[in-house]
Length: 420
Length: 178
Image (tube, rainbow over all chains, first blue to last red):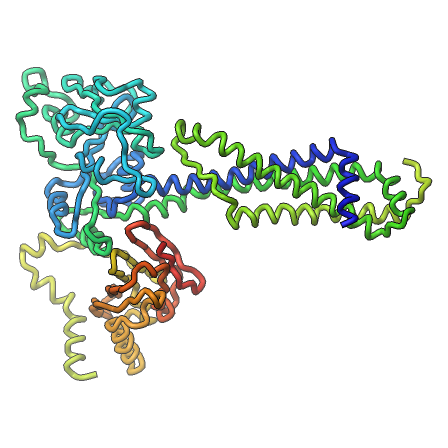
């Protein structure tokens, strides 16, 4: 105890260096903890992209490919699913609901997705969260569109805006569906998922805008079908890109998955989104491990900075040590004194680091949610966090042994009359 | 083994050679040339829980169930096949759950694969009814203890709240359900 008090007083005497050392450690600890918190948030955010959907069915390709284009709107389908197969599965007694989706067109760089009102009804993200309309309502008319928060924000669209969908993908497309403009009837609240970057229209609307298109081109003026004429046509699609399935009982999910994967009339693939997400995370999760390693090295640099500071101060403190010895301190007291000093510096640094990290999280939380859709849950310190922080303090104590050993050696040989 | 069983086994092992000649035109149209995936050392468990129903499916290559993937060659191997099939058909010592969950095996769905015709897979399915499903915090896959030389055991889990994949390693048996 006495040694600790002595160490504290000695530190107070050199408060500028001590404070600088503490801040270096604090910043590195805040970074490490922040990276760890972000990592957890990213992993959860990732897993939260889709929920409530039991199966996603598309043309037979890869599990990840299907997940990427149907949920993340990344990449493209290898083939479509025929309407007959979709109907057959949708009518199965074990199936409660289905959400058909049709992709392929875009609006100024944002993907357009044809679907039904079942999508707003059954699709969930982040556990049990449903899509909420910031303005307007789901589509009811053939040429109605519902846009995500990013689309609304970046393009300045709002309810009642008119939009013209481009044929195919890309920001600038020469092939436009300008004869059949859509009216934005709803804007969705930010979800932090790819929904924010999607323009949703009715499934029939996708058929309607392509009704007079052949081999990637619109028919010549004589053969064109106007927006109003298209309403009278049969707009049942021949095929869709993929569909999502909700089962009456979760227990039947695996059986249905196998039945679809072994479906003979058409090569189909059914995936369980949560399972595919786990696999995808295992792939992309490597990046956050790399980030964690970088942060760990920053902490190491902080600790080495502390070591440098203490080692340089040792020479100046030879007289301090000699006086301590003259009033009866044993060499081992000097040793403990220095180890205690590093321990205190590191603990203060860790505590300050945790404080910095949490204040940053609380300060940045609203901004992160609004701008990036990252839902950062500050939470308490987990067991893993404590293990990390404990490791830092223990490493600091181990590092402290080096200057302590040097001081110990010095006090054995130095007298009171040393020249500093 | 009785003469009848041997005869049946012989017939079954012959059937792939017989089948092309017995296919009708309609069959050929729908008959697929696809093969399911088959990876030695890799077994999959599908666990689903909804309400009071807990279901378990196993998908394992015969080599990891029996230790070989051909027709049994001697009495010891034949006994092993009989015993293993009895175990799989009975569904005992497949799964362990917290005792207060009150789970009982309701049905076991098992059909023995054809041995000696190339790759063979075991795909039994079991359904349990639990009187207190709220107590189901975990299950332990005891079947893993009986399987042989499993390199990778993948568990796909579905409950109303959770959908995930977990890999069991190093003799680990427990799968949390929450």
